[in-house]
Amino acid sequence: MPEQEDRDPSAGASRASRDAEGAGGEVDWEAERRRRRARFLRELAEARALQDRVQPRRAKAARLRHAMRMRTFRW
Image (tube, rainbow, N blue to C red):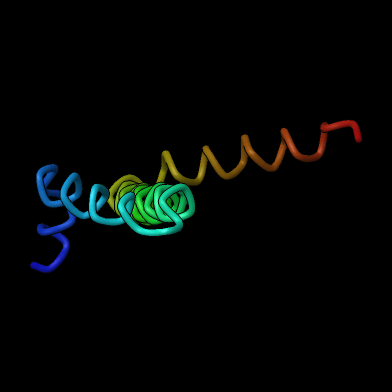
């Protein structure tokens, strides 16, 4: 899978060091951090969706609790 390459810490370190040598080292580091964060959030959403499919009763209860919290939230 192509995602496995991204998970290799040595590959990320070499890519980050190459990026840091460029003119915009700080910008490249920030872009890499945003890419990792976006990948993490995608995987987290996928895991939650899987959990919702596997445990529908728990997912329904969580939706109801969230709706109640949103109704009682004071702006």
